[in-house]
Amino acid sequence: MLLSGQNPGHAIDDADSVQPAGTTAAAIQQIRRARDRSEFEQSAPLITLAMQTANTLLRSGDASRSEMLYASVYELAEQPAWQTTCAPFHTNSLLFWAWSTGLQAGRQREATERLQLFVDRYPSHPDAPGAIKMQMDCFDRLGEHEAADQSALRRVQTWPDHTIAPEVALRL
Image (tube, rainbow, N blue to C red; front, side, top):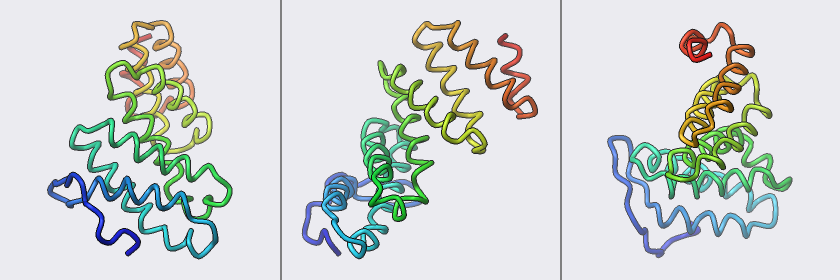
């Protein structure tokens, strides 16, 4: 493997997996140095590892380190050379990057912007209504209740049949 002999850093342990978070961060750095198609393809398992580790971190409450990994995958996916390799992760890396940002104190403004970017890019994605709900929550935490109401209105208008639409409609 590309990273043999490196210190695994902090182990993330849950019922599903044990993921070396330090190694994953080092893998992202190594992935960024890939220059040709074969190196991109060889990096796919490391990108998968980064996404799995970010998910484990997020579920364990470590939104800060989760955000770093999701952001790294998203930034790779935005580069033309990486679009094929990262395609399976592009959408979710943006969504969960925004989500992990929103779970951190004082980071709600950034989260609202990333969540809006997700909804703008992927309005038919099954998680788009949930992204708007998270955006509403972030606006509320910022004390921007009118913006939260506008977000709620947009959600009800766009997804009137979604299971959470009645709850959101009560807010209006």
